[in-house]
Length: 147
Image 1: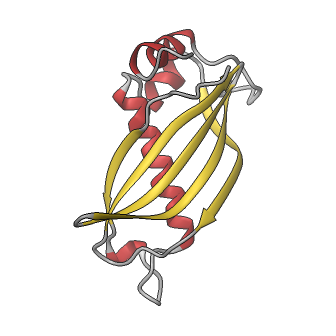
Image 2: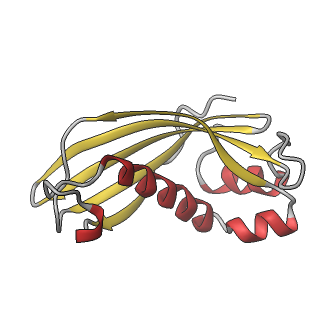
């Protein structure tokens, strides 16, 4: 099901020394961590936590496909906004559009963008399973009426 008008979730991040490489730039793999944390905080914002989903719903989420475009570097102490928007939901999958944006006074610079396909699996069998009904309802109620 397409979710063209889905709401964008925004999560603030500050770049710490540990996020940077020898050149003083955010190490490319750390954007993946920022994106992951943003998706986790999105789940939390609609009333779900990873541990509870695993225990109560017998569901876990894995990244099945990832495409990242790196546009500009982030540096130590930069204030970033990481976004997540569900652009498609069907069966056992969610497709997210994600962005990392540097927020400076009066200007925002796009640093990286990603398309992330997430698959819901059963934690023991590791086989795909439908997204939990309660999660789908929370997404409908919270993010958009287009689901």
